[in-house]
Length: 171
Image (cartoon, rainbow, N blue to C red; front, side, top):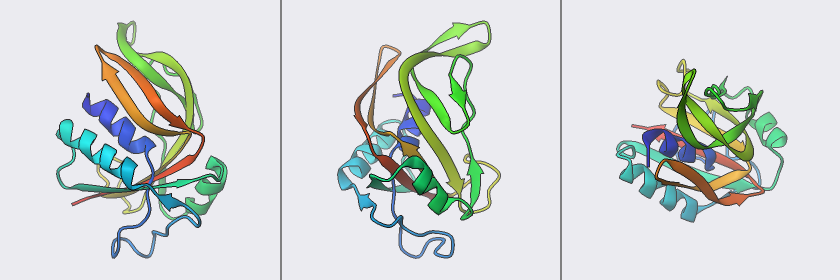
């Protein structure tokens, strides 16, 4: 799996608190349920892509809407919305997931999958962006539980009507 696809997967999974880290800014979303199976799957895919070293993630799932969960976390950190790639339909927090990539007039372009997701990242440690951050959460709906990449094509066999809250901490 490509590094970008693994980061996408990690960003679309969900998370509650790790004890003692950024306690003033972090609070678990009320009623969200930690999903150890998704955590294990994300950790394994990150390891396969050589991205898991020094990172820990916790994942929680809520049936509440994206907007309700986002409202809970808004103001606890700095919002970062992933930029759309060429060929990717996006507006505000919503974007279409890629089915793959192709070379186009604007360089590498997204091949649309037809799956739309709302997503926002909340940077908890004051970093300028997600690449520099060591502590962030990603909120997304629907929950993307798995990304499979074969021969340059991406499929999403586990899409759930739930809101994912992913907390990632880099050492």
